[in-house]
Image (cartoon, rainbow over all chains, first blue to last red; front, top):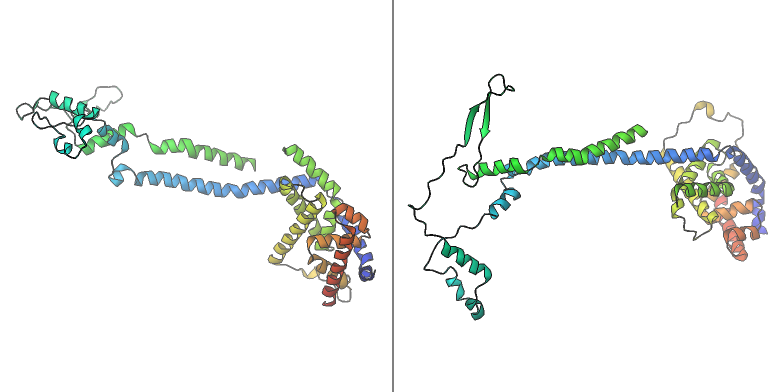
Length: 216
Length: 162
């Protein structure tokens, strides 16, 4: 065939080159190929390692500084625990025996609703009628509570007779300002975020990274 | 596929189709044995990496040839981007004749063909019959002849331009 004739002049040299290449590559064994694959897999894992470490460092920084920036002290926001605590307090009812609290609203209500007040309203009404009329004379004297009391300690752990601060927190009738109460509650309720984060995220990541580095 | 099964499959492939990989090394590395060694390793790594994704839609040999050619092209591109250092001692002495330029031209022309066409030309240059090639690739003998004639014309034009 004409086309084959065209390639005939190359055929002999092609075959010689082929044999030489086959001989040159005959010393490559399967074990060598396996080693090459293992090296490739290791380098691929290493390529993923540093982005992972960087990402972990970014998360750690964000968690450390982000928690501080977004803390209630920094933003002035009320902590959810404080807000929930306040919400759980019973509402202060103004006593009245002459005016029905829902009298004005009743005009807008349909007839059925006006005739049968809801269970919540019945409850409110019962509470309102049970409360006595409070006057200034009837108000109880506020309890005198020591906010902070310095108590000298005699414990052997404090040989220099250091003064220990004892904080008395009044339950239900604290004279402390609302802001201070919030702080006290926060101190008691909110766990230290940094330690938890370190235990949950940073320490396992560091262990992983250390293990991986040791492997290589 | 478990790691052990994958390794067994890989070993079988590499033993069964070693000749194909050698051919790709010959086309793309010509007589550079060192580069051929590297390319052979790279092809093995690529086969290992893509072994899980082999769905047997084409024959093993076709799939493997395509991977080998793509790996060779990528490697050559990477080599071209890398700055080359030529030592004075390695330059050919004056008066000595380098290997025939026309073979280099042929390799270069074949390297510019499609992967399937390269395989057909390589097989024909190895004196393999259309019947054998058809059995290996699953193609019709007549179709192979027509395609081969088209490729030869294409090569002739490329080599005439040199």
